[in-house]
Amino acid sequence: MKIDVLLGLQWGDEGKGKIVDVLTPNYDIIARFQGGPNAGHTIEFEGKKFVLHTIPSGIFIQKSINVIGNGVIIDPFILRKEIGKLSEAGIDVSANLLVSRKAHIILPSHRLLDAVYEQEKGKDKIGSTLKGIGPTYTDKVSRNGLRVGDIEAPDFDKRYQKARARHMKIIERFNTDIDEFVFDNHKFVEYEKLWFDALKTLNGLKKINSEYYLNNALKEGKKILAEGAQGTLLDIDFGSYPFVTSSNTTTAGVCNGLGIAPSNVGKVFGIVKAYCTRVGSGPFPTELFDEDGQQLRDVGREYGSTTGRPRRCGWLDLPALKYAIMLNGVTELMMMKADVLDMFEEIKVAVKYEINGIETEELPFDGTGGNIEINPIYKTFSGWQQKLDKIDSFDELPTNLSGYIKFIEKATGVPVKIVSVGPDRSETIIK
Ligand code: GDP
Ligand code: IMO
Ligand code: MG
Image 1 (cartoon, helix red, strand yellow):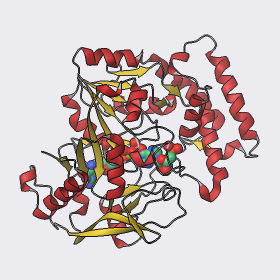
Image 2 (image 1 turned 180 degrees about the vertical axis):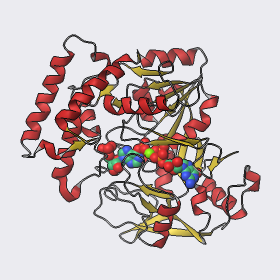
Image 3 (image 1 turned 90 degrees about the horizontal axis):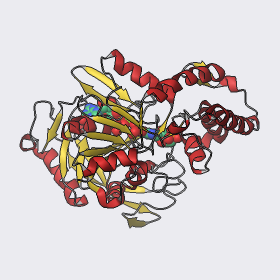
Image 4 (image 1 turned 135 degrees about the horizontal axis):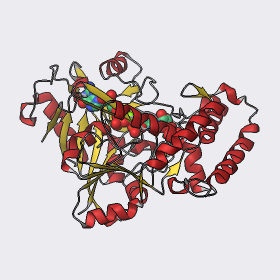
């Protein structure tokens, strides 16, 4: 067997959580491969709504095993809260949630560092979710991190204090009052105590060597879906650097985030909104500042699942989508939030960019960094101007929506296999 991959092709929040949940009945194991609690994956069914940050989105289907892979970074405090919310809803994760011993741990001082660095950047700030992502991955790469498998080591406390002291030394140089920063309504010292308590919950979960677990499962013929977080344009290497996250959000991230050989990657499902959104700073060529942008935000309820911030909205960006498809080897597209476009008279898609008088389909090096002007060249489509809620097959889609989908399929060379027309699990049209 090969492992299938599901990931975002834009700037995150494409609707990955919803589709993982929809596809989980077809899989035995769902495995998150990168990112941390900067992610917010929303799942809605039977009138209930959940937002997951660390736990894979397969957790609602009882028979599925959910693995937090080595490439993920975990904040025990946030994870405990997530487990608590699931437990209140009657979902017990003790049997089907497994955690890689090699996953790195987000320390309270990582969150503090994140906050201090962002404050220091002033107007150049990245718009980080302030969950300690950058500092934790930095410690991983600089070989200073602490991992889930270390919690039981006799010298864990000593190593924790050493890391904390190193972080505090850096923070002291910034001349800030650490009491200024609050973490989930707690000042740092109080938060640290709660964090330590939550570490016990993390330590009490089933810990595995996930690379062996997953490869053995593949050999046994088990079906595995890898769940990505964030989106391709937030990838540390290929995103709009430095306005990116600190992990590889692309298919390549599955190989080092789960220990899967490239030859064992199967289908790659690319999740794409029918338009674009971005939360946080950084370039966004098709961003709208007009009524259309506001309509997308209002109808699409485009406010961050993790931070509640309003998302920036704009038209679909084909050059960026093609770039994401190229990097990920996408085999199937899933188009999300088509319903948000229902009432638009006209819908636009950027088909090319004009940069310094030259037309191109390539994302420029610096276009991603921000100093040059990218002018999108649009193709305009007539809207379908009807509600999609009564539709449950591709054949019944309004002609203008079918045309929109066919155009995207032709331009990208990748078939659209799912059209999502609402947040609920049931509002999903599968080809
Ligand atoms: P993720 O991070 O990729 O899992 O996406 P988020 O959960 O952060 O954001 C997607 C938002 O859109 C959530 O509030 C979903 O409930 C919602 N959503 C998902 N699919 C659809 C859809 O087809 N239509 C509408 N209107 N909302 C959707
Ligand atoms: P999901 O998995 C949307 C953005 C932040 C910021 C940048 C860096 O829900 O799609 P970080 O906290 O990683 O240091 O932030 O990346 N960002 C996301 N935007 N969805 C996400 O995750 C995101 N995770 C991080 O807004 O611009
Ligand atoms: Mg999200």
